[in-house]
Image (cartoon, rainbow, N blue to C red):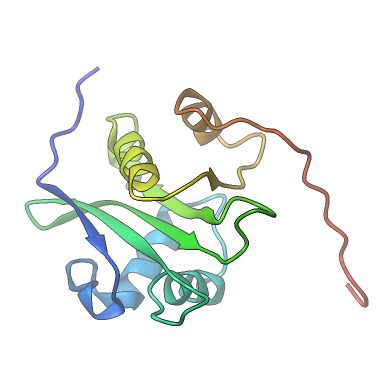
Length: 155
């Protein structure tokens, strides 16, 4: 299998530095399109990007953008929360690679770079039938707990 060549993976820590992906709106649209069929709403994707790139003391993280010759290849959104000790403080929120480029190592490189840019453990949520689950396991992620959700009052 041929591994894709990368012009660069760019680490972004401020919303105004998302120009190479068409700003926040361009990044959100890219993520929504290339996370399918596991995509979140545009509203939730925007909230995740804003959290990751916030300069508030209790928020933060970063975005990684993979591109070559001006072509968008993939993106990752990592959150850093103040919850370290209870759960891993770093949450890999989104990682997406253009459909026509999957299987070439771009997702692996984004996740590896994301983990290397974190201090401490990283957690993520992945559905059992998502093909990316195998990649995460090969990269050292393990399913330590069963996640259980309650719909909440009125839910």
